Length: 448
Image (cartoon, rainbow, N blue to C red; front, side, top):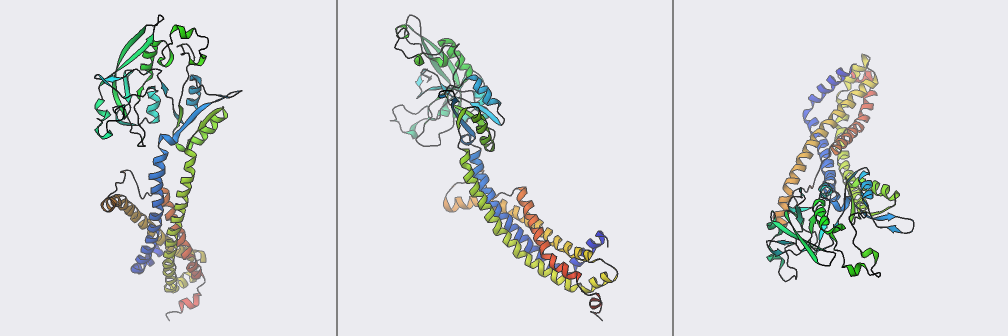
């Protein structure tokens, strides 16, 4: 008996009892849909909560504290160290933040800014790392800067925050930076550098934090150092202080020819899953580092347990639906006893007869899985669209636009369909074996 003949025989028999077939497929579809929807809650919450945290720079960043040396920890990070860190696989960017060694007295239209320091950053690296902005853009030219979100707040704290004009009003305006240096004769020299504000940093996540910094790029730092002839724009001490033998060597400003030292160095990975490998590799090279990405393992473990639990409950629903498949196939064997007897009489092999009923049960399971998957996607879409509206209406709480209560990855749909198909085959296996044991004479004598 050819396989095409077996499919034709199954299709004809399935058409004879459409109502019973429909109810069996419906039960299977409900079980499969229940399995997918339950498991999708775990995937959706993990996507919305964990992946949002994982994508944050706080998690993908590895702080570099120093390099191991023979005697102690060498905390000096030089250019060659930055070049090595950039060469490590899956490193997206290497950032640093160094303070300019004078205040620069920033003003906008004659108004002094509430500035706690000027910081030099590599804006090319910060662009890759994801420098947080509340308005504007990152600098593209040497004389463009980014200012802190709280730079317009009063210095003495007397002005209420709600009365503070927003920093974004300064976008596009010119800020004057005053660079100073002492000449050999001790006289003070000044140079004013006009720069354009093109970006406002992101608001600090904690209420007690403020950001009143001015962020400058390497091009502007070069202008400052060209005037001061010292690294990071440091002011040279008076000649009397330089001749003082009691002056600690570390307090002397570095000249432009001295090796440059970088502070607050961070290695930014291109994904949280690569942070551990990067940290281990650079640790073997003697770098002291720290990252909080490992703490996400516990969160992922919780969501994994939740998904397994929800999937287990959903699988029970599929197993309950298998009872309907078993009953349907048992009745099919009883009703087709005469057909089975005829097939045996003309020489059909028992395996071919068993295969016919397994095909029928698998088709029921497959139809139910397809219908259940379609319904699950519709339910998932309705939940993601409707639940935020319900929560806002009854609880007056706003849900983020990218938050997903339910998410059905393709792997979940495929696994659910395979579970439904497997359960259907198991449910039809016993009736199929029973069909091969039907006595030919008794089956043919049934209607005589």
